[in-house]
Amino acid sequence: MSSVNKAIIIGNVGKDPEVRSTQDGKQIASLSIATSETWKDKATGERKDRTEWHRVSVFNDALVNVISNYVKKGSKLYIEGAIQTRKWTDKDGVEKYSTDIVLQNYNGKLVLLDSRKHNDQEDAQQSTPQDLDDEIPF
Image (tube, rainbow, N blue to C red):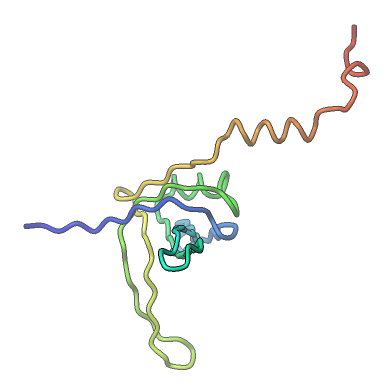
């Protein structure tokens, strides 16, 4: 039987994405996405919450382009990719591990969940003159 390696998260971007290029010119985007859950503690009745941070690495050129043009801190995203853990040695010789959700060319999905219309309305509200009568040419 084959196996499946798939992670699906919906969350908010914690800081502006980082886009960089490899030596051969391929672009890579790195994101930090927060997912949160809230519940009521049965013993105390107190409302509790927990936030989990996920590292996301994107190697798909089309998705990197979308990320660099439309994703910023606070953006809500649907992410679907594979979980990969990598190991490296830091400058002090200590072995470190990092687990990312990776979006490659054919096994990743990214959906922008923020309302484009909502963002356009905010922009329009900020640039609308206070007195519209002065702006009407007839």
